[in-house]
Length: 247
Image (cartoon, rainbow, N blue to C red; front, side, top):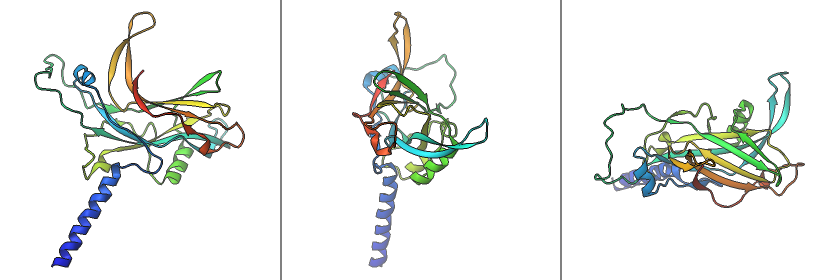
C-alpha cells in the first residue's frame, strides 16, 4: 500500500508540473505581464488585461499561390506566434465601485487581436498589417509544433479569467500567429504593435486640441544588421524590452 501511495503521489506531482508548464516560458519566448495601475482600474471598471507570451520575429520561406494567376512562387513571411491568458486584476474597493443603472448589459467582449509592423531603412517607414497566408500558417504550425490560429480564426469571446496555478489553464488560453507578407527586405529597424490583448482605453489630447481615444498596446522593437540578400531568421534581433503603452 505504501508503494502504491507513493506512485499516486508521484503521479499527482507529475500532473501538477505538466499543467503548470502550460503557462511557463517556452524556449525563446518573451512574457509581457498583465498589469494595470490603480488609475487605470478606477477609470475603467470593466478593464481586462492579458498575460502575453510571444516569440521573436520568425522568418519562413513558403510557396504562395498568386490568386490572380494560380502560379506558386516562393515568398518570405515574417511571423510572431503568441499565447495569451486573461488574468485577474486587483479589485477596486467597494467604496470606489460605480453602479451603472442606465445602460443595458452588453454581450461578452470579443478578443480581436491586431498586429502592426512598422519597418524602416533609417529614412522611410512602411507599415504592414497582419494578414492570413494559408500556406504560411500550415508551414508555421509544422515548424513550431503547435496549432496556432490566424488573425481571423482566433477571433472569439475573451476567455475566462485564469490564474497561473489553474490546472486547466491551457484550455482557457489563446494560441495565435501574426503574419506579415511582402516586408521590405532593405529594412533595418522594426517596431511591432500588439493590440486587442486588453480593452484599456484613455482619452488624450490630439494635435488640434481635440480628444483622441488611445488603446492599451504592447510594443516591441527589433533590429536587423543583415542586407536584403541571404536573409536569415537569426538576424532579427530584439531591441529593448517589450512594454505596455497607449497609442
